[in-house]
Amino acid sequence: MLCNTPRIGRILCIVISSMQATLAAEPAQPKGANVALVYSKQYEINLGGLERLHPFDIHKYTKICRQLIKDRLVRREDFHVPKPVDREQILLVHTEKYLERLKDPKRVAEYLEAPMVGALPAAMLDRGMLSAFRHASGGTLLAARLALKHGVAINLGGGYHHAKPDNGEGFCIYADMPIAIRVLRKEKLIRRALVIDLDVHQGNGTAVCCQGDESVFTFSMHQGDIYPIPKEKSDRDIELPAGTDDRQYMKILRKALPELIDRARPDLVLLQAGCDVLAGDPLASLKITKQGIVTRDSFVVDTCVERAIPIVVTLGGGYSPEAWSVQHASIRQILATHGVLRRDSP
Image (tube, rainbow, N blue to C red; front, side, top):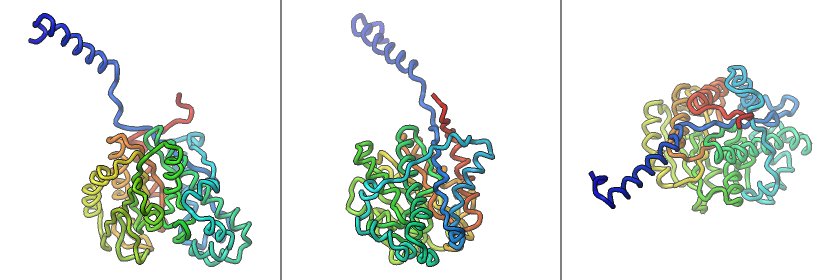
């Protein structure tokens, strides 16, 4: 009707036509985002077989990589290979004194909860174990960079959420997620970050590393009556009782996640997707099924993609024999939903 009004009508018609042409020229953005995968064979710890004495299966990273290739979901060349984090990057979070203590095998044995490595030569321990942690931490940093560019990135390692600025514990040496955040902030690539820690154990190290940093919001949802005791204080903690099942778990997470995102207003989300919430895990007593973990991880990733927030996934803990296959299934689902970033894509 307004178009029949002489002058104003012609102006409005031109504006409306212009808007329609612009909208037609810009295709709707796909709901999904390409998923970049990060992995290096350097994630493998090699201490002449001693690594097999620890309950954590350090070989799960390689198992997942090989199975994804066997599934023909990805090619070997599609994996992005990280460099290890360097001393300067590590010192953005950790102290000089701590790095000096890492030269003492007995101290490292305490941090890894692996007494048998305390008698090894320092050089062998650094080459065979600490180097693997630096490479996996570099994987989290590279995944963060790729997530900013492509939407989603998965590091087949990382999530070392018990490491503190001046101390290691719980098989965690370097605080890979805080390191990645600090590096990207220093480079002015992000301003704010949200850490979503869904490992069954509280992300006590991440909480300490980020205390007093208003640009980082830390969230941990974990079993309340197990290690670490006492707990540290994240920006928000949700403690779960033993026996929590899929339905109860997802009801809590579905309510919490939108509130977290609204409060944190992040430029980047880092998900610690530990699968030690799995029923039967020897170090915990939640009752989450394999499908429950797949649903959990997909929910977090899908929510971030829908809100156009880049997200990094790290694998964290998991101590049952099925841990690697559960996380493989979770990654499969994310790839099926959002697509693989091919290294030879234009």
